[in-house]
Length: 200
Image (tube, rainbow, N blue to C red; front, side, top):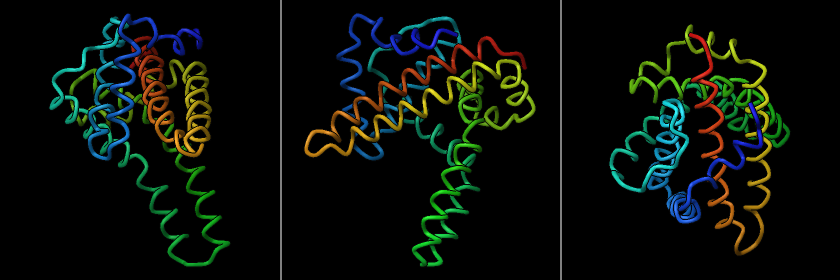
């Protein structure tokens, strides 16, 4: 897969600036940001079906539900790292807090590796249960493993860059929210394409 194509993908839409800004603004507000997440999953579904385009900003209710379900799926996959992190932090020792954050972060990266394909299976089949068809998800990842790993690393690096921008005083959080949404669209492109290429 051409990594640069994914980075440029959102800009191919003639109204991309407006659509990305709307998504970024919605991304700022807790719970409301489920809508922007649902939008990115809608993009993933379109990419899987061969339509590399950005949808219109309509049907907010369905986008909200899709985003909420996507968040629930991600949390379920990350429940073990979250528990590990909470156990360390609850001990109240500063050193253990740091260890907990580091160990939890590493486990999140490991357990999170399956999430993109799980979400792709969910949107492709419009079924919550499809996100937990572990045998198919593992087989699909294995069939495109090299590209999948590269895309996963690229998204992590992009997210870290966006996180660094977000802490800039005054305007960083606004720019960060918009860039975070842009990265979500890149994510949708990468893993939508990989799902379409993969074998169950």
